[in-house]
Image (cartoon, rainbow, N blue to C red; front, side, top):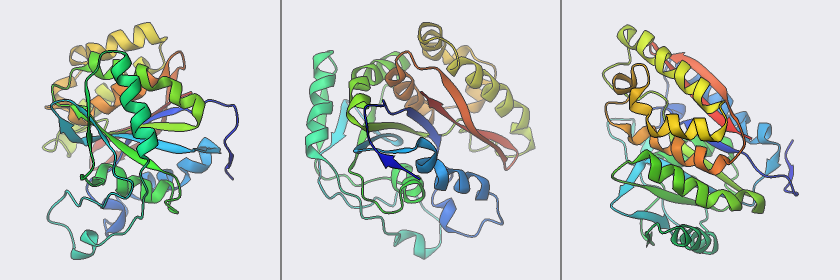
Length: 267
């Protein structure tokens, strides 16, 4: 049961959001454990947020960009799935007021930020959140990655957003702990486990150690084999930056199609 927000600071999260619309198609149970975890995530947080910011691995821009549309459509940015997945409904509302706060906080630390009043919610947002908060009754805005994918910059972005956690805002990085599309088989089993074990250890460290390791994530075991391109990992950097002094922990893990996929929570 969720309670109304009080003075407690909300956690930050990095979630693995699955593959395309995987929770809404028949997959012989492959994604059931992750889907069940997402369905219970809102309850496990225990407090209903006033608003949500999602940093998705499916949105990159030259400059950090924030969604300002109060009623953005869904953006079905996947292909090759059954027809009904292009008609999924999730009636989210945005928050221009929160978008403005985000712009101000980032500008104050010297990060240039643009706004976008047209882009829709990509599947890194609406697919998992349709399970997490099915009533779609919490304002949600999306924040892009900066397309240089610099980990230090994205940690700084998270650090700038940290004060919003005290105002009832849930900050979520949405990506994947492993994202080598050619590695979803037995060849990826040890690779993904090596990197996942490293991530699990690193997020549990004090922030100075944690952030230093995350800035140099390419030195981790099997790093580039797990993320040939890191757009699905970088949302973790924002969540970690927004964590402040809060330690992280792995809150979900499963072996899916031969590889370890995990999600993490700070605070």
